[in-house]
Image (cartoon, rainbow, N blue to C red):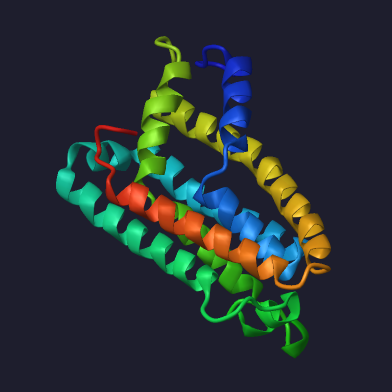
Length: 221
């Protein structure tokens, strides 16, 4: 790719980074566990759509503004914190551990035997999981420019193309997480309450990511 230094290293580093679990991976896994592989795959598409927001924002210079403006960072950060805590709380649930059937029947995005799964809502949730996280924007600002050649004729366009490539590499990783989680979910159904407890663990991790984001500042991408 013209204007790019060490393209192979960029792809390899991107794959390794995408393999590291974060809020996006946890969201994909939670949907697969609760509603099956198709829901997890749809969640992965929603997550990818949310990343596009940061790629385009960075290409247009909005992410640089976010990094330099404490007020702008704080607004987006607290929106992201609120959303992650909301998702985590909804996953934690209340009362005694439920069966897999009860989880799917009572979840607002999963109606199981009671009706069709709300895939549009899953896509929207995946989108906001990434779009409201300012740390994703700062990550792109810190990571991608390292691979843009000083001789690149259009650095903004090169940035966007590398961001799109990074997102393209992330999609199969998230889809693989979705399939693996769906496979694990079918086996956890044999253990009474097992799926509910795993769901609560994922919820606790979401809350942990929310608290971590609450402590973040623009100087630590």
